[in-house]
Image (cartoon, rainbow, N blue to C red; front, side, top):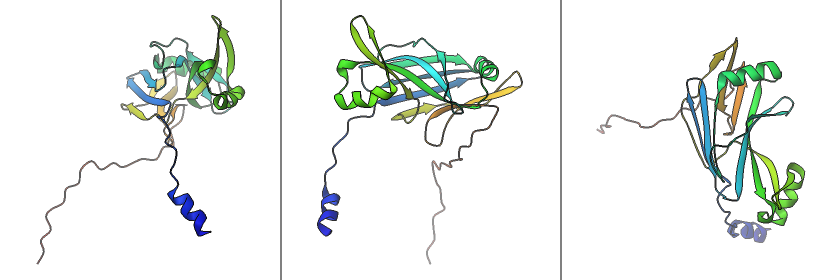
Length: 195
């Protein structure tokens, strides 16, 4: 028994490479939002930005054109147009953000290919086979954002926000249930006099 515990304690873990999700930046200026970022691996091509309802997992393509190349992405949209589209088309109020990526099958290991078979669609373009699938926007190595606030439009309100686990979501006609985190940047205390 002791041998097993010691063996587990002193085992060296395999070092993993960097996470796929590298940088994410969310900037809101009044009623418009810009979502940009990058992935570590250059063999990924980001195609489009998608929104999926938590209620029925129906995916809704928001922006079909990525403004950047290869493993980087940048999307801009207006929240009022999004509120208008969601209030007419869908009943759910909570949505999660995804990016659709495309990757050359020759770059994928056998283990990764086996995992992708269930969730990816495979296509051929110019004689090259690709796997296309969705990646949730969240839990990036670096995430930067400015103040994200509510936008009112047509009797509805919407907000882009980060969940407790660090994923990017959109809420229509509701308030996010994220806990308030208190951050202490600096602490001053008077000098203590000892007698």
